[in-house]
Structures are given as C-alpha cells and as structure tokens.
Image (cartoon, rainbow, N blue to C red; front, side, top):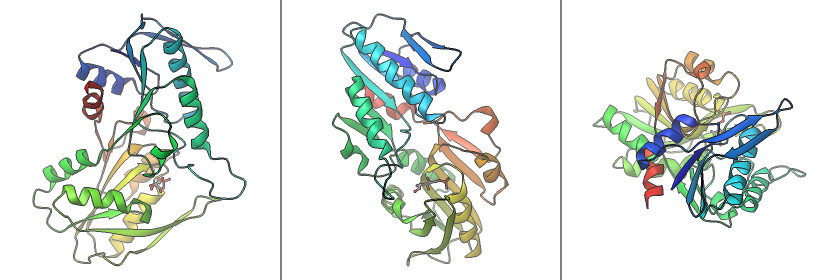
Length: 302
Ligand code: R5P
C-alpha cells in the first residue's frame, strides 16, 4: 500500500500514514507561473494499492484538479487500485438544481473523478444522505458523530441540562444519530431559511420539541462555512433561556471571516475535525480540532 498526499491536508495524510505504519510517498507538485500544476509521483506503484489523500477544501477548484492529476499519475504508473480519501468533498451542497438554470456541480465533480480512474472514495459527513447514490463507484461514507459523542461524554458525563440542536431541519437525521449515541439525549431543530441568491440566513423558531429547561445547547452540524448559521442559531438559543452554547461541526471550511465571527460570538467553544487543515491565520481561541485519522486508517486497513 502506498499513500500519497495532495497539498491540501498534509498533516492529516501523515497521521493516516502513521496509523497504517507507512510513510507518505513522495510526489512532485510543481506550480507553473500561470497557476497550472504538474504532478509527478516519485515512487514505483506498479501493482500497488494506492491511497491518495486530498481534501477539496478552499481553494476547491485547485485542490480538485490536483486530485484528478494525482489519480491520473497513479493510474498511468501502473497502480493496481486507487482509493481517493477525500475527507471533505467540495461542491457537495450543489447536489441538485435549486433554481432553474443551475448546474449540478457535484455531479460534474463525481463524473470527472470516476472518469479519472478512482476505484473507491472514502469521505466524511456528506451534506445529504442521498449523495452516495450519485456515485457509480464504491463510496465509504464515514461520520465524525461518534468522535463528537465521545467528546461530549468526556465533557458532560451526566448530560444534565443539555440538549442537542440541529441548526436547520436538514440536519435532523444527524442529530437523531448522535442522540442515540448519547443514550437518547434530548434534541431539537431550528427552522432556518437561507436566501438562495444572497446567502442571508434567518433562524427564528424551533421545531415543536425544544425544551425550555435546557441550560446547555450543543449544536451539531456538518460544516461551518461563513459561520452565519451557527451565530444565528446561538442567538436564538440564548434568547430562549439557554446559558451556554457549544458547537460540533465536522468540516471547518471557515470562509471569509468565519473565525473572527465565531471567536466574537457568544458561542463558548467550537469543535471541528481535521477533514480540512485549519490554516494558522484561521485558528482562534475557542477552537478545538479532533482528528478523523484513526477512522480513515481503520477503513483502509480492512
Ligand atoms: C447547511 O445546510 C449546512 O448544514 C451548514 O449549516 C451550512 O452550510 C453552514 O454554512 P454557513 O456557515 O455559511 O452558515
């Protein structure tokens, strides 16, 4: 087995390789003056099972192209099989036509990945449970929810006064799963509306089961991009008697000034995973990063 890393998340690639008892194999990623990339793997992969780790975090297009080229290089060099570990799959929120005339960008990404020669994809917490159906090749869809549940157990062993919150109705399945992992911790969902043209968010009411007596809210989401969903949910919770709000979100996309917005918000703590490598300028005091390396390595060992 040979593990190669794109440039998007080398720390995670190294952790995965370490768990597998190998080193990350060398590859050259040369950037031409015009921004084009030339990829060359620098190890013999003939008849090898090749693992390529590349998250498609910002800047997604650059990282996606790099992934296609890494796959092509491995295939041309005689790899027996190619597994693409894409912990965060970019464009996943564009999985269907929302407004007439739109492209289904995720479909294009998937088709191109399949055409490039990937045999299997391993990814984490996709935005919609229907996304795996869009793939023709096998996809292993992992989740950070068990990592989050473990952390919540460590922090609040008796779960007292706590409620799990989905910041939108689309996340209700996710919240039910983590509630089960936490012995049926109560949960509720917020009704969020997003203006599809401007991205503006309004989160102004709960579904019917919000329990007013909860003093601590634990928001669970798949990703944080601008941070606006989390801040709107936090404000609504505080207006409704909650005293402390914590956040668990798998993918720290952290677009624009999300880090600043979250640090300055009333959220007490933000837990994310390393599906995306949080760059130094986006790290903030309230942030804690949990690793998904073990889950990925576990799947690769099977
Ligand atoms: C939306 O449906 C997702 O589950 C996230 O809540 C959303 O993508 C977060 O985006 P933002 O941080 O920009 O509000």
